[in-house]
Amino acid sequence: MKRSLFYTVLALALALSLTACGDKNKQGGQGSDSGSQSNPPSQSGQPSQSGQPGGSEVGEYVFRTGETNVSINDDMSEVLTSLGEPQSYFEAESCAFEGLDKTYTYSGFVITTRPEGEKDFVNSILLTDDSVTTPEGIYIGATSDDVTAAYGDSTAGFDTLLTYTKNGTTLNFVLSEDKVISIEYLAE
Image (cartoon, rainbow, N blue to C red):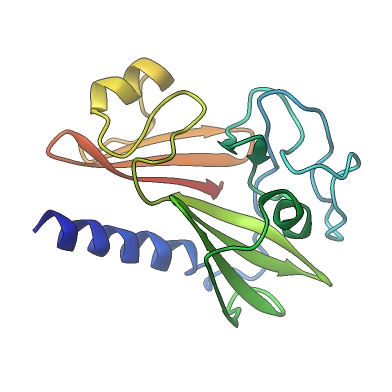
């Protein structure tokens, strides 16, 4: 039952991250990093000035895996250079942008991208199991009290969703029976 619920939530989260079809002109949020400095992609889809994944400003939400920071709006080619080959890859024609939306699956997380010109940029990061955590130490299975202690009060008005937004990135924690069952970084 729990496995079925997990896969249902995973499918829902992936579907929501790919359903930006309603507004073709909407721009994503800016990249993020808890420590390094670089510039977010420009409107023309240019990569950050530093050429490193991890975003633009201190204080934004970032996902860290090993020694690599991954942020919303990072150039995916730079992320791939840092992370290496994914376990699996999927692409489909984008309904919101010109080109292909791409999905890269790694152990413990999934990254989806959006096309801009000749490049692809990180559009969402979904944590899929408790083998990975947010930099603040929150993982699938943590309690709502753990999330609140790490991030403060949520801006969402739901018992089953804790939402935090900072500098163009939304961080969502989906809860069931007071336990985190899904963590996703999204463009605001």
